[in-house]
Structure formats: C-alpha cells, structure tokens
Image (cartoon, rainbow, N blue to C red; front, top):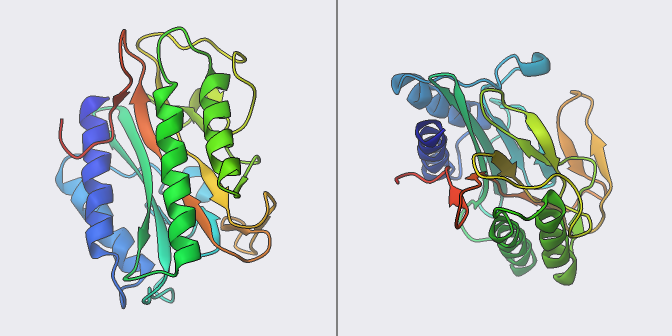
Length: 239
C-alpha cells in the first residue's frame, strides 16, 4: 500500500506540473497514464463501470468524474481536480488535488483552502479507537464553518486491493458513530465541496458531476493508514 500510494502521489504531482493553460485534459490523462505504466503500475479507473478515461479531470464547476477530452482546454483562472488512482502489485493508491491554473480569483482561492483544510482536519481524526464519524464530523464542521457545502451524495471509502472497499467514509455526520478505526485499516478521506449548494447534477455523459448552481467545486483526497499512533498519509510523493 505504501508503494502504491507513493506511485499515485507521484502521478498526481506530475498532473499538477503539467496542468497549465493550453493543455487538454485528454493530454493530461495520457501523460499520467504513461507515467504510471512506466513504473510498472496501471490505472484502474479505465473501464471501471465503463469509465472511458484513465483518470478523472474535473474543471471549475465539475466536482468529480470529469472525462478526459481533447476539447477541454485549460485556461488561466481555471481550477482542475485531478483524481488519480494507481494500482501497483495488486494494491491501490488513491489521491486527488484541485490545482490552480495560473492565478484564480479570491473566492475560488478561499474555497480551495477550506477544502484542503477540511481534508487535514479529517485525517487528524483517523486514529486508533476513533470512529468513522469523528472523521466525517471534523470535515463537515471545517467546511460549513467556512461557509461552503459538503456534497453528501458522494463519500470517501476504504481502499486496498480494490479501489472502493468498506468502510464508507462520509464527509458529514456525528462524532462517535460508525465503524471503529483499528490499526491496519487503509481509507480514502476525500472532502468534496461546493461553493453554493450541496446539490449536484450529472451531465448527459452520465459521469461528470457538477455543482448544482454551476459555481465552483473543489476536491482533495489522501489514502491514509490507521496505525498505533499518528495517521500515516500513504499518498505522498516520497516517504
């Protein structure tokens, strides 16, 4: 899991470096997948439920599951959520970051900062003896205190040999509820946050999920290991 997480993190870092004005999300997908394959891994999102891309690239109001496209060209002021999963030797690493394309307006910047902060508030609760609800509640409080909206329809999850495993890890809930966290568990914590509403719409492509009012969305995610002590983030470029 450490090796798979590291590969996923390196691939995500590569996506961020190449996410510049003028590039298409299709080209980003090609770059990332070529890198993962060159390291002996593969991209399990390809074909998952019929998904046509190797990775999900969601721009601006697109929250998750954006399909790579030659027609979708990044421009200054955009944001792009790059959701990268890499499988290596039968194990999965899953991580996401929302990148800025050049400078962004202040209201967008504040949304990104709040969403990333919520991720780390959630991770801080991922310790032995806590429950999933402690993570969920920490994320929700951070997001709502900042004035934004947790998307309740989509949630985090266990991750290991499969991309999506038990337990479910919502971004909302009450502390002290849900499955107990025990050492050895690996989970994907992933705040998905909208600017103006918790509601979402799915586009005609049957995949792309957008902010209900067409405003900005943000998404940050790490794969985290529950240990005997502090939580260990597996999706870091180097350990």
